[in-house]
Image (cartoon, rainbow, N blue to C red; front, side, top):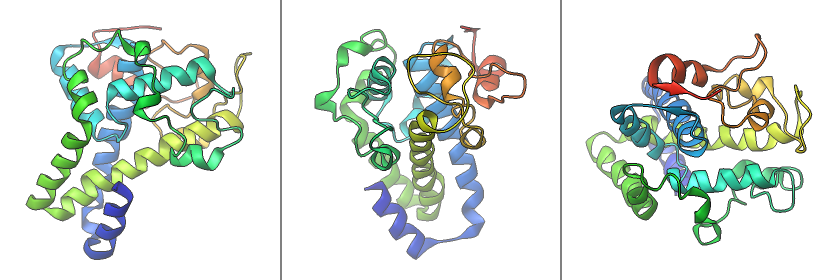
Length: 239
């Protein structure tokens, strides 16, 4: 549905003056919502924060188009346990196009929810697991009634960009790039992908020490999400 919304919106409501909202939305939902909230806070528990920050992360995570923290974390934890095997939900080695488009992500009925029992107590997580589509598309509907261009450029287009960015990590992060460590999987750090994924492109570093708040290992590697966590959001961080 989000692709259809984007195509129709761009055809009928394209306005370059609104692109600044796309940039803001991509940072909020791509870096904060996905890389910081979904990935490092909920899934890997790599830092602690105040309740106010936690609610901010939860709200941003809604528009990262990941299905909510519980589903995203369960899928990603399965990926870590089965990376580059036949049981890997992303299967980048033999289904790269499907992995990029998220077409081979497991459905909710296929998810092992036992893997995320440690985060079900967090505020709003269970509610989003049950009502994610209502919350997401309901917000888009209300925003569209107020200003359809703002809805398109702030919510819809950034959401698709976030999906593409994670798709690139799923594929390039296992097929092309460099390695700093010897690991059992085929993970790679990809400098090009890292330019617009806020540290997510350092995928090999992340798999080597997945509990760390940062993906940076070498001085020349950059991790904007990790910097934001340490200096702006976290009470304590794990290394």
